Image (cartoon, rainbow, N blue to C red):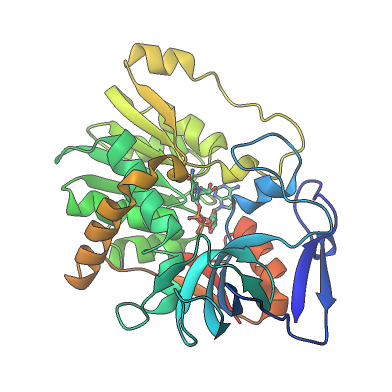
Length: 331
Ligand code: NDP
């Protein structure tokens, strides 16, 4: 059994030396009520960076020299718990371990015949819920409006944009490479895309792509992209603050512009979003996402990295935009 521990709290950008691998010879033993799980897929997510630091947040920090946890799909390889059978697949917040014991609490059975197992970490998992609920609950989309999504080619962003199209919006995505912009348009049906790495005047590019102004901004990145967006919002615009990956590795407070004048002038709303606050709406989100998937109105991309040992690298690569769609490690 291999385990990955948090060795150091990363300073700035995480490095592989912030993680430690531990190997034990024997499989863990299970008692009554417990299951032995073998990890199949591991989700790596930008929010884990926050849990690696010890600043107060909405989830407690990881402890040093303890296993890191994230969304995991695992196979039940032995069971002394009547709710789970050997051979079942489950999803849950589990340790970065090749094998582990669970009492079954917090685990959901997932059905590999209904969708590929990895999809339960993405489009039918936390990032899909985030896209659906963030856009609907705070964005309150109305057909004919204009939506801008940052981090548009990632797990959350690519789904937000597609839902926007299903709901009849004009959708503009901001992402980091020309290849990603091409994918947004050809695979996900976005109306326009902006490569923030090659565009000097992002504010002007947004104005050009959104001739009627921006009604909804789904913000995954914060920083200069989001500053540029503020110049383009309409009256009663809604800004969904889902994430701020551009500042997660900053060691000093970012120098952003002051948002207040933009919000006042446009009677605009800006609200932070945390998916776990909307758990009562997960069944509704799941129903729509799986329905649209089976009707082929929705599709998804995954970047699948092979091997348990590559989990830290896959996580670090999120900050370099190495992924298209959901970044997942296959064990
Ligand atoms: P992604 O799949 O979008 O991966 C991260 C992407 O961020 C990269 O592919 C990269 O794409 C982009 N990126 C990296 N650095 C920068 C930068 N400096 N400026 C702009 N873009 C950058 O991850 P997720 O879809 O899982 O998450 C997206 C956002 O949503 C994150 O901020 C995350 O924290 C947040 N989130 C929030 C949740 C909530 O409940 N609030 C739940 C889930 C996610 P590129 O090549 O385009 O730069």
